[in-house]
Image (cartoon, helix red, strand yellow):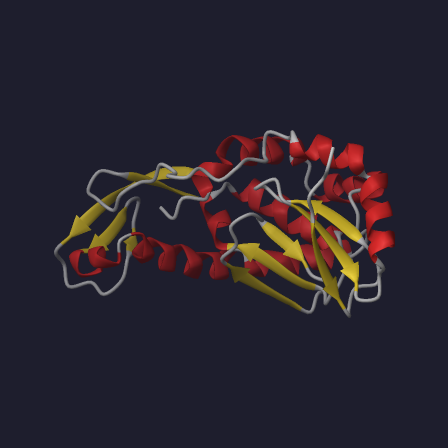
Length: 227
């Protein structure tokens, strides 16, 4: 059976790694000078692992018309794992405010989903990024930069330049899930692949690993909605 994959080369990369994204695409991250034959052999060697990952319930094809929420009174949206209602207000506010519910000024309703996305991103920068530094200290690792990004198929990533990228949508998840993703990416600074050593590192710092992974599997597509 032919196995399709995309190759992404980098001058900074020293080791070849393979990832299976949540949209079921297979990506080979390779050093610039890696030959096609070397890459093919690496894919063949991990073929069984790749097929297992492709069948994982957290992997899925993007829905052609994914169900989404609307920015209207009474709709509820997630924030740190809990649902809160939206209230459209006539007040002279120039931004979304949160007080046990989301207060959205009518002036922002034209932005539709973008209005809350900006708020979520700001909260992610405020609440998530400091925890990256805290956990890095606990793990005894150093990263170059941590930032909140808009990613479709990854909750987080650790780049070859030791940058940590985290999806803004994580701010909708419970804190134990956020912590799991943070530690997961930081652990890659110690162990590049998902070896038993890697998972031992993660479980040492995040006891609720299985609960966090289960939560993401169950709620992943809901998180990917902009509301």
